[in-house]
Length: 277
Image (tube, rainbow, N blue to C red; front, side):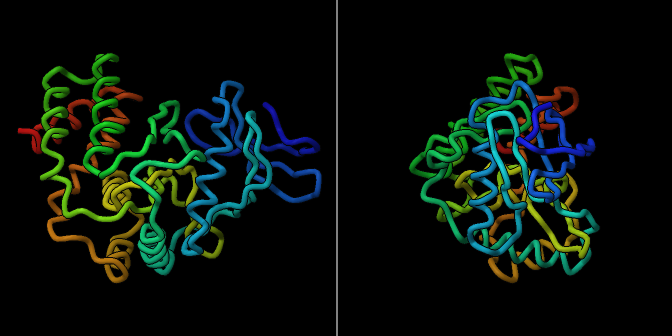
């Protein structure tokens, strides 16, 4: 493992699928969470640090403060864990609506976060002029190709994804400005502190459609239905959003198909057939 200079008293903690994670004491005596691994891509941790700062910038939700970053590690302030209570779920919903509304310069990302990372998988964030183009060209088509190459998605599934991409201008919902997305917002990337208040961690940020974050939360175990109610109190979703939930769940299903295979491929194929016919 590689730690920041002067760090000591390292104790292993949970920290994701591909990184080693430790609670350490830094040279200045402060506690920190450090993730590290020997094969991290150059710029990977600095992009994650930039993503955390970008999400925190609107002041609506907390992210851990970046204490040190290097190609070999990322050190964040230590947040004493707790349980997200009902008030925290409502705060998360309101804060997520405000964070999305803070917007992005494009569908995609600027130079600070050229890729969105999902475990060992990196997807290009090259900007597109509209959301359907970005979702098709930067997410669905590349993922379907990778899944096919890894024999995790059938040719029928790949063909169905292609038909979804062709239909996206009519499927994607009314045009909206690019939202400021967490990008990998499942329940494991929402943590609560000791007072029950929410924090966002492990982002894969880009400018995109706000329904993507919400659809992923619904797919992998949202903390509370009150979260969604609080979100809509601040920023109601466009008409027909219920019919688009699985359309935007196709993204994380394909990511999991590429990374883990198994039943995820069948689930992704089912969803693609629903929308692609």
